[in-house]
Amino acid sequence: MFDLRNRTALPAQAGIGLRHPHLPEFLAMPQPAAWLEIHSENYLAPGGPRLGALERLRGDYPLSCHGVGLSLGSAAGLDAAHLARLRYLYDRLEPEAISEHLAWSTAPDGTFLADLLPLPYTDEALAIAAANIERAQQALGRRLLVENPSTYLRFQQTDWDEAGFLSELVRCTGCGLLLDVNNLYVSAVNHGSDPQAVLNALPLAAVGEIHIAGHARVATSWGELLIDDHGSPVAEPVWALLAATLRLTGPCPVLMEWDTNIPELPVLLAEAERAEGYLREITGASG
Image (tube, rainbow, N blue to C red):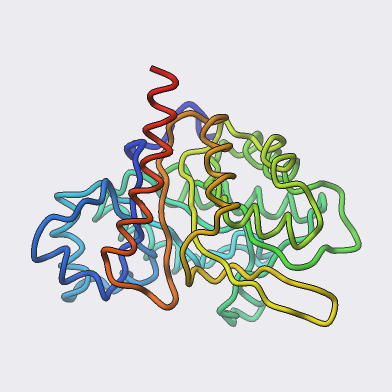
């Protein structure tokens, strides 16, 4: 069991996801980003120029490592070789936080599906996810932040709502929560739920990092669907939900993600600066 009081060491400021097109600008001169997050799987090679560049930046910026391939919901368990590669990377970089999605992406035969598929919120899925999280934390030697997913359907069989499922995972494994506010909003709208009600029910004391991003609106034969594509500025309702979240959590590290249609670096930094403004408001209110 990992102690919930072992909170992340990331600064309670706005950071950005470091993407390869922006790497030369970071290497050329310091950038106004309080901290950086990388996708762990992009740096699993045990050497080379990409990892070398990240190690140079690591000396100047606090770092969060966000995994997308561990498949915490897989009934087949976790891939030992993948865990070992992640452990090597994390021991080398010593990030302030590590995280993974609450999803599955690996078939029983080991095939990687290249997608983050949702879990049914059942007792069986809870037991599987909890066992995988505990194994990951022991293998990686670190407390794991688990990210709430964006979802587009609901399973017929369910024993928990999402907030209850995440709360029980936190309680029984000692993991933390990476609260993706955009995912929360996308899922709530897609399912006809109230985002604020979902937020209020989450284990907010376990939040160690917050994500925000853009989403797309897609017309379908049954109505409009929100897609978590990280390819546009943050939508105004997500900004409002971020402000509501920070009023409940207090100051917390906030990451601006942008993964498709990647803009010039100043655009991304401007989004992070807006998030920083919400953090300053909270800091002033609590000071």
